[in-house]
Image (cartoon, rainbow, N blue to C red; front, side, top):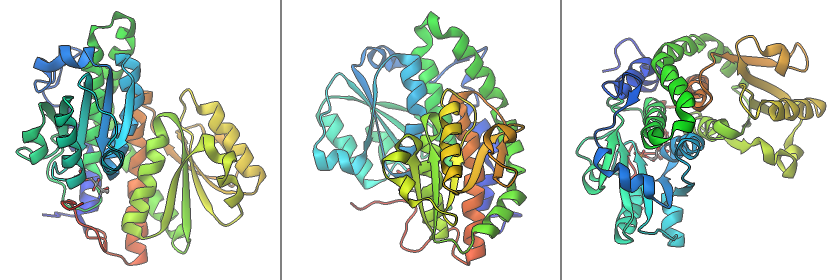
Amino acid sequence: KKGDFDHFMKKEIHEQPDSLTTSMRGRLKDGVVGLGGLKDHMRTIRRSRRIVFIGCGTSYHAALAARPIMEELTDIPVTMEIASDLLDRKALIFKEDTAVFVSQSGETADTLLALEYALDNGALCVGVTNTVGSTLARKTDCGVHINAGCEIGVASTKAYTSQIVVMVMMALAIGSDKMSTLAKREAIIAGLTKLPEKAGDVLKLDGEMKALAESLIDKQSLLMFGRGNNYATALEGALKVKEVALMHSEGMFAGEMKHGPLALVDECLPIIVIATRDDTFSKQQSVIQQLHARKGRLIVMCYKGDASLVCPDGETRVIEVPQVADCLQPIINIIPMQLLAYHLTVLRGYDVDQPRNLAKSVTTQ
Ligand code: M6R
């Protein structure tokens, strides 16, 4: 049921304060993360030579967003694999690996075939899925359900933010034997408890995102530049725009700007730069200055109150978002992008919940 909303996508975007709460329910007690599904395998995971994240589309992006904190808190190298590419390359998977399969539906063909492959190679296989009883849930050695609730819109929204939350909790649980990161872990856990409220705050940008969509309705293309924790946000924001609004959009690693994309910059092409404060902030400020010097049409995402730090002039459009812990910021930052994609789609007159040529669950290769 869509309730008061015109479309499932809009409903699911607005459900995120609740879906994030449900994903964390019963798993954060007295400052400790408990993930029952992983408990018996923790020793093996901690001893693994590397963690390999495997998924497709939005699920892959969620894993990419969680990668930095997983490496930081566990001291285990994390590599990323798009399921179909892993299969094409017959990539090396070792029995000392922990392979984490991320899939909202738990039925994506490429992800399931990659799972068979990793099981054959003897890796410990962990599932992160929204679907209890799915093939992924049944065939993996262990796992965590994301508990985001049923997602109907083809564009994945609330499942994405819950997947990140669950993988951050996994990082906290796996890394919980390290005294050196105790303060950091405590700060993240405190941040998790406030996250649903912050997601509610950022949803108030709905009207602003509609106005931004109105200004972009006739554009051919939209670029998104991110780095660090928010490289995934750029990729995922662009995927949402192309998938539902049927507008060409590309998410780019801002560190690669000078190696090609800079040639595209002119007064017409809109570019969203994610510049919420973290270790990469000064680098993003410099990217903004360089784009501005080339008269780029900039839209900057930053913390509330940071506009004067990131905008080279009074004309640059800003999307001001609330601050959370660095590793949780992608959860907040994607929400305005989801709203933008939604409004662009409605304004351009396309089918929001069932974009052409796409299926909710891709069960063929
Ligand atoms: O069910 P899964 O998470 O395995 O699906 C993977 C992708 O097909 C999916 O995330 C797709 O990219 C979304 N429709 C994007 O919104």
